[in-house]
Length: 159
Image (cartoon, rainbow, N blue to C red):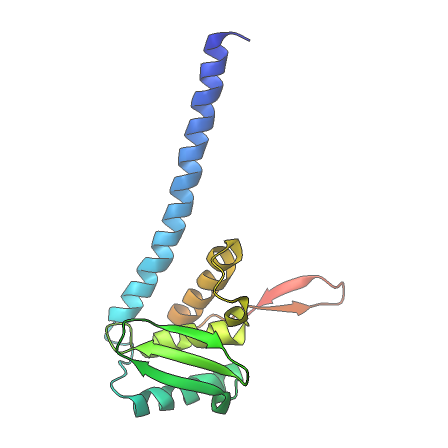
């Protein structure tokens, strides 16, 4: 193997690394762009008070088959939106700013429904490749993905 061959292999590897990186970044920018457009959309109901938030959580939790009485709702002024597992049920904190919409409630309830809150805020490949994209797709399009066993014990993703 000559020095030219080695440089060609390095160049080819670099090219594929750039193509793969661009594909992954394009995927995430598309998801985050959809989430941002959903947040500023005039069709996405803005939440203006804690009472309104509790009503929306009750409506959306019912659609997912969740018990809204086990979800402690907090209307935050600290700029953070998240859900967390507690001893009896979950806590759902929604920021009162731009992201305080029905869509963000749907996003966090999707995390609760799929037990993502029980992963103790691990930022691993599962979070970036499964949990967040699934929640964003539910927030924006209302698509619900669940694992269901069929006759062959294979897992299918269903709507």
